[in-house]
Image (cartoon, rainbow, N blue to C red; front, side):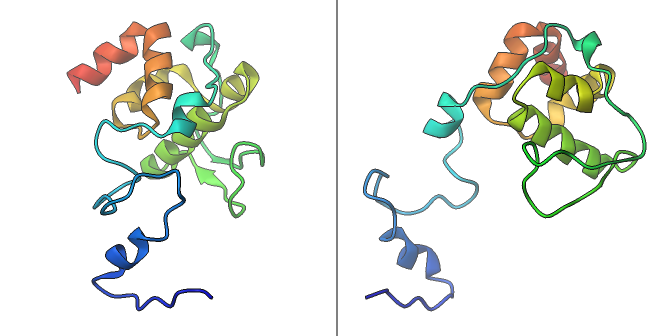
Length: 144
């Protein structure tokens, strides 16, 4: 028998008991998918593609781009690269979901990536892999 939920101010406490058995019990975090500094097991285990050089990233910098399904499996959407918010969301998706250097080369631009890097919301393990390969990204993120 399914539990009934009244979506209101106490919905968080009502949902806390619905967690899968392998997840820790207790209150749900107030924002995001975890506490600051906490990394999901999926993000930790997922392989992230990283190019050999930033200069090989020669993707588009203007216009509309529709990502292939293996990079963006949500509703069909054309990213407007001339809109900063769309541009950042597309870069986040590509960094998270790219399966090869070809995906990265086709959809990212090295100079644009460097400009956006401090502001991108990406999993900590992905950020660490990219910054290990490209220390200039780490320096740029620290300076921002």
